[in-house]
Length: 297
Image 1 (cartoon, helix red, strand yellow):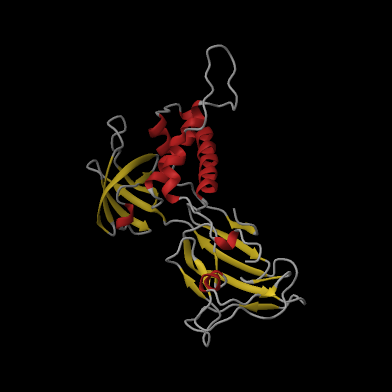
Image 2 (tube, rainbow, N blue to C red):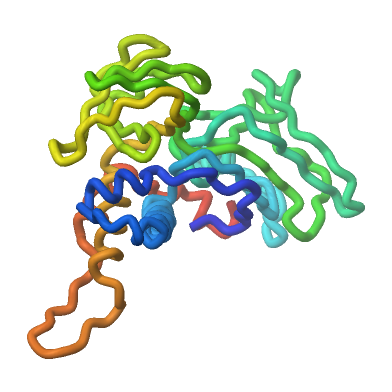
């Protein structure tokens, strides 16, 4: 994992709701709702750490000690090796997906004077570029640009504050008995919601189609949970990829069914955390770049 990370604003919701987990686990005892909510949070944090991603919208501060290619030990390094040049030409921003622009990007000298890095297309107009096509996203030097040469403060002199995570939706809706959902207020619908889940009131539904920015079609996860018509109720949704959401559900269900870390007694087989979780997260797991492990980066 990256060093120098401090959570500024935590997510306001989890990728899956208690209604999602109840439908998945078939846990019909309403007295367990708070317990399930806790398991969802623990499962979410585990999966975020495993994938090295941010799932729901959140804000982080990332602090680093020196610019790429420089350190207290080697000073400014020079090279004619193209691959090394590009290694020192950028650094990665942890916990994708990044939601640009950066909230702030500052650095401090030995007298703790603050300087601001400016986004720009070239060295004449700014200090850096954002490469959001890479994952993790990268802070990159513009053409002919160099990192600031001022002598930096000794403790975490370079600080970025940024928002990350997948899209989150909320507002008020009507839903009829055919599964047509009409937006009354809040975040408009878009096609990234197709195939995901939406929570309306206390019920969770599958999103089948986005009819318009203010209408979508849903269907229940099973016949045991029919559509409940309602007017002027809250809704929440997100576009966290479904394999990630399934991993969280599987792990939360595992916590719910196996409430002790060690099982004892006759004829009891210890149950490990399901390998399915790792398999579902595999395609989304971030492999850290050179910059995260190179002591001179």
